[in-house]
Image 1 (cartoon, one colour):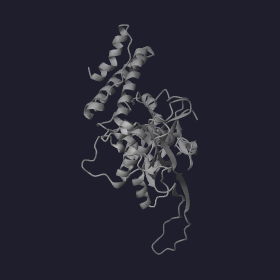
Image 2 (image 1 turned 120 degrees about the horizontal axis):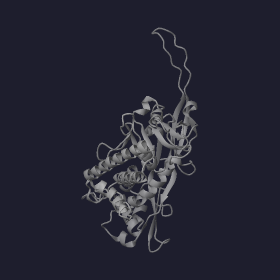
Image 3 (image 1 turned 180 degrees about the horizontal axis):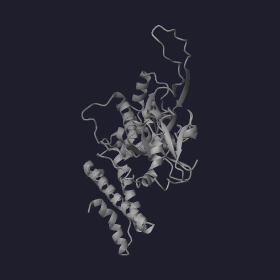
Image 4 (image 1 turned 90 degrees about the vertical axis):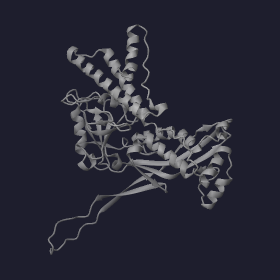
Length: 427
């Protein structure tokens, strides 16, 4: 019996003895020891246990018309274990490296002096050289490139939509993307035939304003005095969770008011009446559920609403509870539609397309748009305005020092052909 199966089944043995007990989430071996291969083996073992238990549940439904509650409970525990392993595998490792003997840049050294002791002189001189009028002691100082890169790297690792979207860096407050609503007239002609005059193309533009996203981590004086603490990593680690959580929600369902506009916030339309500016959807035909018979058919319908050019790089986006429901589906030959990653660090797949887990996607419910499919690299645009600013505040929460950290981010759909939704409803 594998270690995963032992952890899952041990509480059942305790329950049989009348002792109760709770299930500990499967622990990822790489969390402390860095053993990625062992962690991947744990995940595969958990998925095998999941398939075995789900097959048992399906057999009970066929024989008794209902599944044993203990089997259902066990399956739910394994599902949670798989989710825990997946989440841990996506957490970026702490590098702990200080860049060897490489000397820090002048900006980084000045910034570290500001963060650790409040010394602003170095940053003021640098920003005076750069003729920077936008950063000062009241509005904060721009972090060095090393720190901004570290923050961006961590956000790319843990912010699910950012990781799959098109990301552009801009120096202005708004990014304007032109697109052609009607192209110039074209046609065929012989080598010596007269050519009729073509009409001019019609150009429109989509605007993506960058809005301020902020976090306010706190530090103790002891931490700031500790020269072993890497300030880049500390600040990035402190703000990554707050930034990623806010971004994740905004990129999925943000209303566009002082935040990015999420792809679920746009007007939706049934695929048969879709037009540019709307997000098309396919219905399941059952309110708040997949159809009782041949549930995989609606997933196939969803896939083929996309044009061939978009399907090549398309993926499914859903939350873990929806994924738990989809994970139980099989095809006509009894093969599971959802498959774990083939290699450590890879992605799970559904019907051969990669799966991105985004917790801000809605749960399965009546008329919920709980599953998205598309080429998000072409469909959704994230706009980062260059520069992350930090304002040191040693007064508001004494004895702690607060760091008001802000960056400007925008986002929205840039190609309405590239993303489709599955609506758990009848119309």
